[in-house]
View 1 (cartoon, helix red, strand yellow):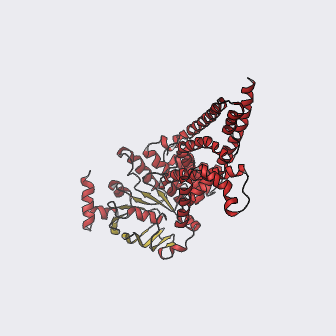
View 2 (cartoon, chains in turn brown, blue):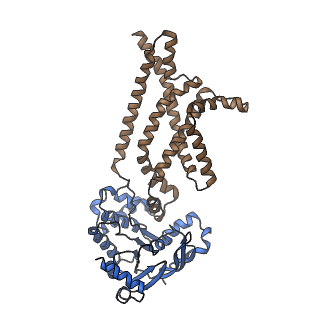
View 3 (cartoon, chains in turn green, orange):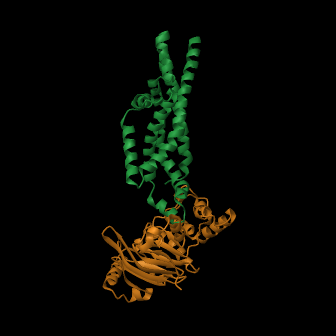
Length: 216
Length: 252
């Protein structure tokens, strides 16, 4: 019983790191993704082409590789000080997820009928008023399902942080194999992920329900 | 002085000339119907008036003031276009109500954003307009809970809320079931008693005949025939107009 308690505490500590990576990634990647989606839809060809190329590279290579590049790259290539481990993880995750989010935003924005913009225009609204007062909520409603998918994937992707030795929950659990010959702590981590993803699922369902009052 | 004076409007999409030197004028309180077959440029003309498209040539004057000159369109700033647009209102074929707002909020949104009064004033004005289109019992409803005809009446109230000099309708009943067109046409007709100047692009020949002061028949980007409804419908001079009329009525 004592072991169970100490393992639980240890895993909780690891999960706190998992949660920090998850939370900080969302805080930065959600707005950054929106900006990137605007750039990828820019009428200035060179801007949209540059953005699309960038998104292609990030989506086309493994997050694991990106973590390694962010952490080791600056030191090895440019001979400058690398970021610490934790900030490196956040930078890599934010860039990676912002790219996926930007494509989800783009899909949502482009699916709003042109007539909604035109209605705002003929009513004398400014571009930003049209976006924030008319378009945005409709976009949010449409992108909740793909967004919740991506965000739930993020929960589990955080385990990649261990690649550059950031001690998240899986790392902590795995250390019991070597130190105590215990395998079950590793399986036990599954419960943490399941419960957290379950909470997220409930949250997204509630959000969908809240926006159920209108159809667009 | 004419409330609206349109001179030599030209517009092409790529190599297709959609509007070729369109000119007409409108007096305050008049109702102009624009008829013609699909692809004749009617809708494009309305969109040019509302600056959803920009004419490549020609001028638009409202109350004697030139607000648009096709030869210098590039010098117009975003904000300038926005303010000039307010001379016109536009009711769309497919309503384009804002789905996340209820009827009252749909009508109030633009006046609130443009700060046209205190919130109480704007709300009172909006309620009066909603009553005018006969939807006082629907102020709290969302667009998805309304029929097509009701949606279009809300759209009319929403356009009226900005008190435009000229209110334009782009085939306001084309997206409606036949039994719903009547209620919308009745509302448009009722506006005539006020001093609203209106331009209605329509396929409803009966409506055009009965309500308009002036009818323009467009074909292939030009005004083929114009005049009072009596002249245009009763005594059409152009062959195209005669052909169009006989087709329109043979459908009925």
